[in-house]
Length: 442
Ligand SMILES: NC(=O)C1=CN([C@@H]2O[C@H](COP(=O)(O)OP(=O)(O)OC[C@H]3O[C@@H](n4cnc5c(N)ncnc54)[C@H](O)[C@@H]3O)[C@@H](O)[C@H]2O)C=CC1
Ligand SMILES: N[C@@H](CC=O)C(=O)O
Ligand code: NA
Image (cartoon, rainbow, N blue to C red):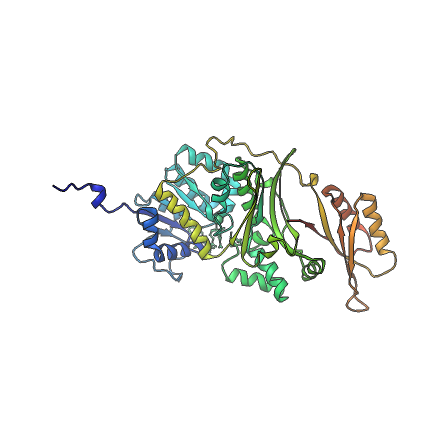
């Protein structure tokens, strides 16, 4: 006699998705799910199928066939579709429809997968509570460093250790711009346009170049590393707008490359978190991370330093991260948002950046006349900042209105350096606001 069990014969129940947002990432997710359907079914133990979608423009050609998928003009209605098991939010933005979709889905007990770093960085604490209250997982691997499994590494892979530092190169658009400008000499605006055409940039690219996108990601990484939400407004943020071609070539002459780094570490006074352009030694691991690649670094008491590298933006890498979250949901592998069961909910105490220390690069535009260097070094002396080296290139023409002067300091306090820069900026011989870049050793 043969015995038949329902599990042996019944087809596995599919995990049914509603995808809100069909831009670079949304269309990329649909492509990946179709291309890898068999592989995903094997890994997830059940098929993963898109049943409903929502976007702004139904007629737009996205290179993916939407036939047979239910279309919603209003993404909030997609959430209430009884056939949608999991809501995938790929609209973007910390407020408006994206936020409403995520909140409504969690409140309805539906798992959510999102790539929306702005939303998680600004509202992660409240969303974590909603997720816990309704027992609805919220997964966001794509939100930090695109295709790099950054969240999983920090939240799960390093769960056994006490982390001291986390961060890295967290914005693909900025890294692409800095790399291509350095390698080709193309101007900022042209390279930014290329990054937009490649689907790397945010809807408003100032979010990338002013450092906010990297700060969103750092806020999330630090929350995971230290098991408590981080107040986005406590992150010190500087972008790359003021970095010019001359900085890239001075950096090269000094043996460095310029990277936009997000770094967070615990101090006795609290968490210090900043996103700033930095000079890194040209042979260091971070200097080798070029183009749209990101790198996530973490340092733990027992594990020491780790670094993982990969593509931080673009349809394919981001779709890969979204899909990994979907497989976790299909497998029933879910976890509390900040990786701790009973997070304090209160944001971590923040330490002001002025408590930091480091070495600095300072580029000044100065009049080409006697006494200028003496005026500047007098300010540095008065502020207690010690110089390590100085570079001056001759003016390009005899009637050039200024000459560039580059100073590199020894280790000094951030507060002293900020005071010195304010005073130097006020000197009449200095013709434009100084460009100050921190120097990182690793
Ligand atoms: N592009 C990338 O490389 C990466 C993007 N992300 C994040 O993924 C999310 C999506 O980014 P992209 O695909 O690049 O953006 P996108 O601008 O290419 O696509 C956004 C999509 O949302 C739709 N949309 C806008 N408002 C809507 C509304 N009210 N209702 C329904 N749909 C609406 C648009 O029609 C479009 O289909 C963002 O949160 C972004 O930060 C994360 C990692 C990498
Ligand atoms: N605009 C972002 C996209 C990924 O998060 C970036 O450039 O890194
Ligand atoms: Na990721």
